Image 1: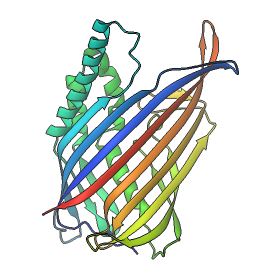
Image 2 (image 1 turned 60 degrees about the vertical axis):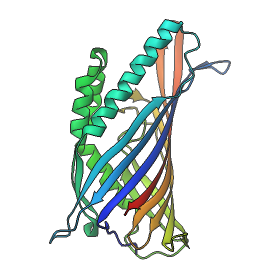
Image 3 (image 1 turned 135 degrees about the vertical axis):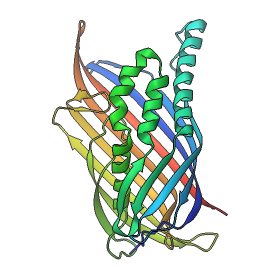
Image 4 (image 1 turned 90 degrees about the horizontal axis):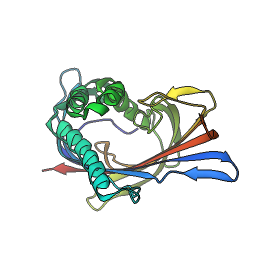
Length: 297
């Protein structure tokens, strides 16, 4: 069994994230229109400090975000006049800069009990959302206020708690599988889907530093035809599909994830009536995230 221990010390966590969003408008088999994809990027670095366990085995973990850079890579501005393009780009960059400052200034920490697989407290994300709302453009504050509950401390705690479920709670050998149910909070569009994730121990290898590394692959699919409201802005969709795939490499001695890649794809459908007729709108969101962790001497 993989031991869940947070080794005391400091670690540098690096992350790159890419999001792609686009909508297709379908009126018939011969009348299909698609918006240009919107592409967003995020690069971050965090120094994570694990404190010593107390008498009850509780560990305090502090996060110092040293880099948080968001940007947009969309190429959908060809029809704008130069002054319109400049204004649009300035608004985009203002949003990214405001969010970056809020994250860099926040004090983020949590309390966990690794042996019991529990995330007890998470703090700092409410502070980030409040700062974002405070510095946002007036026309955007209502939207950010609506989204606040999805990205604050409570949902951050749920996301951290879900992370424990990727680890087996019984001894496993290469090729063994185990299923974990987890709520993937950060899924684009959908934020309340409970996924049954199938995990497989694919191999155990030795890296260049002599560490024994466990490679775990995860996969899940979730579909529903029940109309409901999803996401921070509570848009009603008639059909939703979620696909999740991940590969993690874990140091067996410390059970610290040293690298990982995750991909989430969401396909959501809804019908909208316009003056020119009724359209089936198919929204697709895809998120790819890669990460590495290294110990700071």
